[in-house]
Image (cartoon, rainbow, N blue to C red; front, side):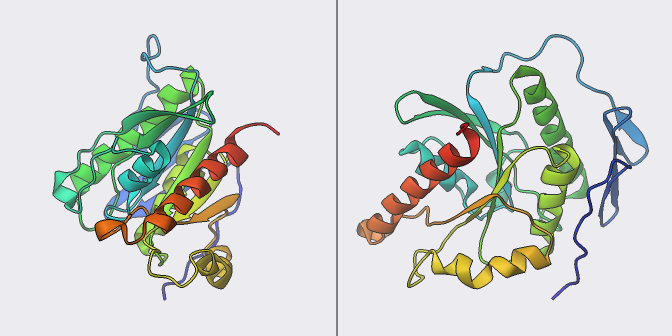
Length: 245
């Protein structure tokens, strides 16, 4: 298992280092630097995002079921699911849902950032898109929750995704929850977290909440009971972490 040093909170310049890519964040200039070229802050009027919904950014590796999580929360097929990484775009797609009758949420399904599955150029473009999304949302209502979707293993890409979104782009200011997918065959889905929660602490992944779920109802609805249970878990997770007490 690779060694990973937990991140320390600092107002100095944190950095994200990926093979052949170096990204630095400046608190003074509020900009990102890509290979020596600084990205300016978005200028002009904010884009026409609806500022009323609670904005939830869903991120993680390709193939972990981010789009399935969107559909699970929505209770229908809003997001296109595909096991083929090449079929995914580099844009972040918004999906509007209403929970408990009057609580609007906007779920942002982001591209999977996997090394080396995508090219260096696509990786940089995807990071730029994520940066722009977060800065735009900050001007129109804010980011209210990060959802890190993953399967049952903390890979190098999981660590990099966590550091990018939680530490660098959102500056440790946005609550984060972990969503572990594809647990339909486990004897007890929630037991997975009990058995593995210490691993997250060891790898420096700080989560305020979690959900052990499946986004797959199965052939002939074999896992329908667990799928519906997972939907209730996701609704409760969003309500608990986003809405004030």
